[in-house]
Image 1 (cartoon, one colour):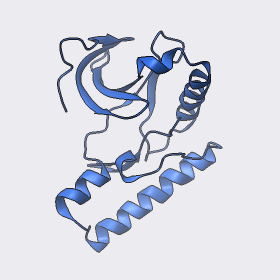
Image 2 (cartoon, helix red, strand yellow):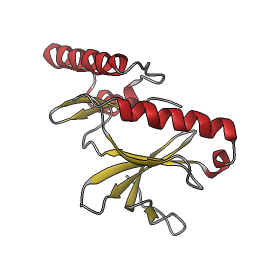
Image 3 (spheres, one colour):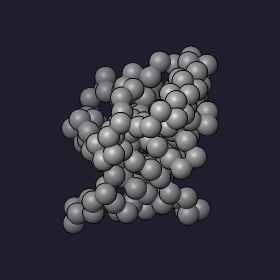
Image 4 (cartoon, helix red, strand yellow):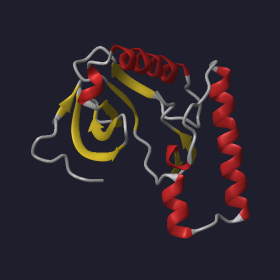
Length: 157
């Protein structure tokens, strides 16, 4: 996690922003707090994509797709505004490292942990497919290891 910096937004929609969780080619993910106190991962697209009509169509699709998936092995969407000047999507904040970070830190998983991970990933994909979707960006950095199990995030734009 890193600070927002002096020029970062302090609010997106109803979410007060606290820190940057990560950044990718399409946007960045910020740690936010909802008015009710819940922590959220707020994905804000990069400003240069906000004026791209094709990108907005794809982002709207991602928001709609993410809202349809609500299994125990995904992070639920809390709110979104694909029509905002800079579109954003907020989902449940999942405390835990990404799979790629965990593997880098500890190496190969013990057999029992690997089996539980595989079972969680399989169930997440069942939930995604049951909603009529295909995860377009399944990779270790989009698999979070929460205390109560695996969470698949970021369905891809």
